[in-house]
Amino acid sequence: MGCRSIGLSDQWVFGLLGCRPKGLFDQWVVGLMGCRNKGDLAGRASICEGCPGQALCQSQGRVDPDQEMIDIRMNPIKHKILVMSGKGGVGKSTVGCMLAQVLASQSCKVGVVDLDICGPSIPKLLSVEEQVVVNTEYGWKTLLSPHNGIKVMSVGAMLKSDRDSVVFRGPRKTGLIKRFFKDTFWGKLDYLICDTPPGTSDEHLTAIKVLKNVKPDGAIIVTTSQGVSIATVRREVNFCRKMGVKILGLVVNMSTFMCPCCDEVTNIFPEDEIEKLSEEQKIPILARIPIDTRVTACCEVGRNPVIEHPDSQAIKCMEQLVKSLSDVINR
Image 1 (cartoon, rainbow, N blue to C red):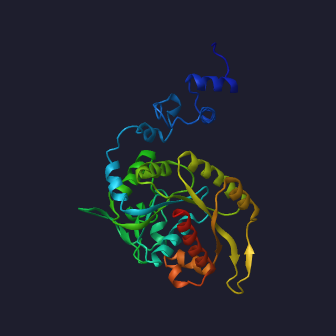
Image 2: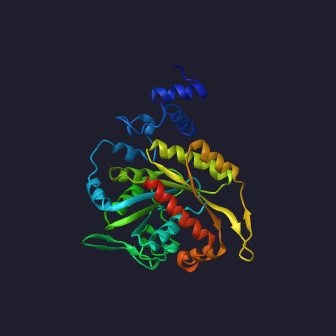
Image 3: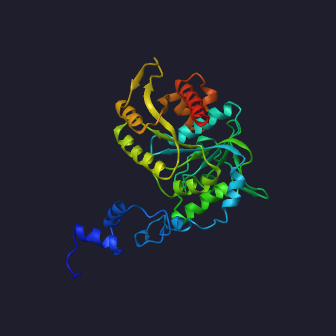
């Protein structure tokens, strides 16, 4: 082939032949060929160069020396649930913490692992900000929340200040997340809630891979009924199905606003999009959680809204979520 200016058809041909023009066209070629995340070429094909998940894919097929210890730590835990979202800002971490608080109030032994390495918010929500991670002969000692003794592990407890930023590339994130599962002494739990960051990235790939042997129950996807959020949720659903993660259901957060003065309920976003998504993807809507300013105020300062406002409609919806989740898991 002679040297000439490169057009779209050339990019496609070069991609197939292994020639790698840099930039956005790489992503376009990957879209045509499919990510080589399985088989002998996983992480080794020319198209994999520069991908942040390359090291993780290369480890496939090899015996991970940490996996045996991870399985030992995770096997005593009855239920492992991933809390995911397509977009940030939909209240995923708040829903995850409230889910843990409701379960703990029902005499369940609960743990929460914060997999959001760059934006940990679990320590504040569960009031463990002042605690530090201690290494013992049995492993890392979990932080103990005053909210019915929920066990917590988060990178937020390893920072000197809540203003410190975590600047990690993919391999360091992967290594730390593996240590959350391998080195933390979780003990026997009824539920381990895994709070993931928004999107589909290294944190999700790592959590799914290390939990594969112990068969997690699946994922709940938190969203609002806003059109922009739902468009991103479709990608999250596609990701879960590609990775073999069972989708337990959708949680619609901030579905309505309840006036603190007169209890009048106002719809914030249209409901037709979330209904359409549920029907077309055959995913149940587990709960619709309204905005309650009393609950919001509790979460902002690390108090337990389940104890302080048990009559709140938001808390009643969370209790319905626990019931629906239990029905789906035990079905």
